[in-house]
Length: 318
Image 1 (cartoon, helix red, strand yellow):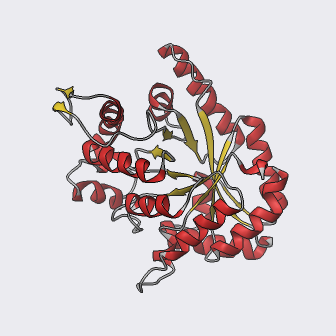
Image 2 (cartoon, rainbow, N blue to C red; image 1 turned 120 degrees about the vertical axis):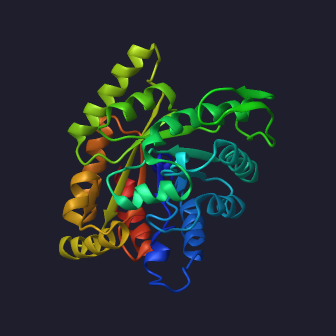
Image 3 (tube, helix red, strand yellow; image 1 turned 90 degrees about the vertical axis):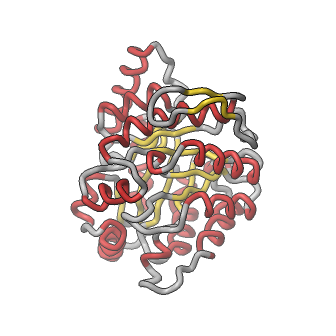
């Protein structure tokens, strides 16, 4: 299925906790979805990240299990909040998982938001003041790349001073690709241009997508960097039921996931709830605007059914 080589599926590492309602989560749904996605031709599977603010399965543990259970699909994070982790730990885990997978890891990173007390608390719990998160994130990216490619790494300044560190194993890939998430945030878009191998966004309109892309190109030019090779990934939440049911199910999903209703969420991130044609039209519009990769999240308690519908009704047309 050649049409799916730029399309990935977000696995329900949070959903299985939400729908367990305090019971033991159905972790195996994640393997089932990943194995199915691989079998039917998707390019990648993705996991989200959060420690305490939006409880979910720990991403690197899940990625390692996925790496051992799949053979072809890329395995990515959409997105990991790397400021919550020391880069030596993160570099070591990701290099190990890249070895388990035979070089299939994509590391999507984000700064996260600070607009909610639960995010402030989450950073404080692991000893990171949330005001430092962007500085730490950017420094951490440089440290990760050095640790993956050099021996005797020294990095005297900053949050993560290192002296003569050699980390093994090295990743299978010369460098694990790092995709950076940003919506319409100046510093975030500059970071994509300066440090990203890819850009992940979920802006709710193609106008905004174009505006962001122009800004990345402008920042690239200022930095003297060619940004034309950067992957442009759209993270899209879909529910493919009929309009009314899709909206009510999608709204329930968003309330459970974020604690806020669909009409608030949909102004911040791209949600397409309704018949397949709506999803087809939306994806085509973003493709025309320059998106060349799609990470699809199913806003539904019925993950496998939605994956089946998307594969049958949407994927062949985009």
